[in-house]
Image 1 (cartoon, rainbow, N blue to C red):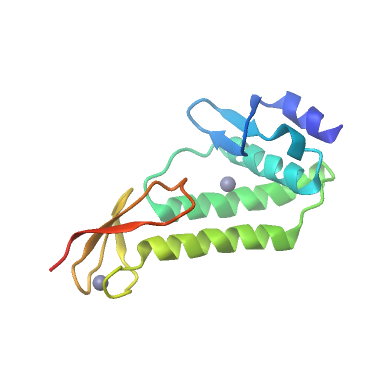
Image 2 (cartoon, rainbow, N blue to C red):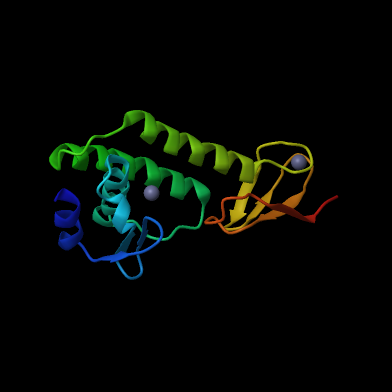
Length: 149
Ligand SMILES: [Zn+2]
Ligand SMILES: [Zn+2]
């Protein structure tokens, strides 16, 4: 099976989600998913991160750039491994990242697109509000105002 073949070619561990750790150079995958087209695509996506040598990042824009690169590489890998590249699914993934990043960066006070100062800190150059965001891996976005004039 294609899935099994891919799994044996990389340093992979079964888990509850698809992810790649640049620290341990390990790909986590959902065993029962990799026999479905979307599961295989998700696995190829993590392999793409691994092959591109992606690392941890500080700024959201770095994350977004790496996601775009990884999806390009995923499309190439999909051709190589004859996995169906569901373009609509890929576009939805990219769009959801885009929306998520926009929401994090939007000033809670005046809705201006803010400036990222640090991995979890943003500021607004219009109203001088500072806010912290929760960890990226959480689905829900929380913005907490820490300084407001
Ligand atoms: Zn990714
Ligand atoms: Zn503002």
